[in-house]
Image 1 (tube, helix red, strand yellow):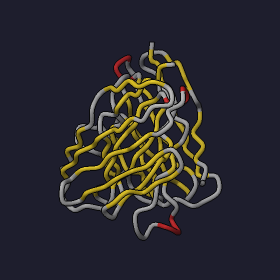
Image 2: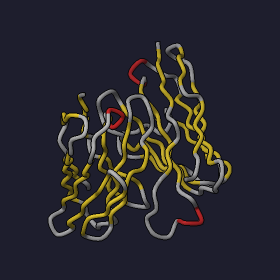
Image 3: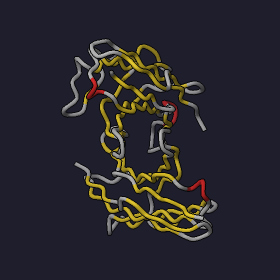
Length: 109
Length: 119
């Protein structure tokens, strides 16, 4: 099975940086996804990591360490619109996705 | 990116009635679609995998006779919640992967979700 852990909530101020950690245990690794989900809406794709290291995409970056079963999503220059839930997910069996519980990020002015 | 359209966005129904939710891939073909359910303040939980032209496969604990899935074409999957009860009230989300790109792990595209409220 899959076991995915991420913090429940994080709060930061506008313009700051926040790092959301995700640890996972899975049989057979096929990469790790990060999704953003605003309340009442479907998730939107942010990143996919399959190799170790940092991948930067604008204000958002994602890091993966396969040996440690660890990933993080880094949000820079936080904006109010970044207030959302951030979901860590790993694929299993025929590309199904197993999601973490999600981290609710609140950005304050 | 590819577009997955889910309909309706929200529905309110009476207890005991059935509700059908549609999931369409608009600009790509999807031999496989996935149905998730999300309760308030919880994460998405996979319910079932919808396979075009064959029976759906359900995750443990999901009643296949209650949640009927039909995947009659490469662009449409439907989920019917039969004899709905208040505890079925939830946010239902479908996702699909591009059949052409099914080798390797590509992103899954999500529908907008359907908010079901059973009264």
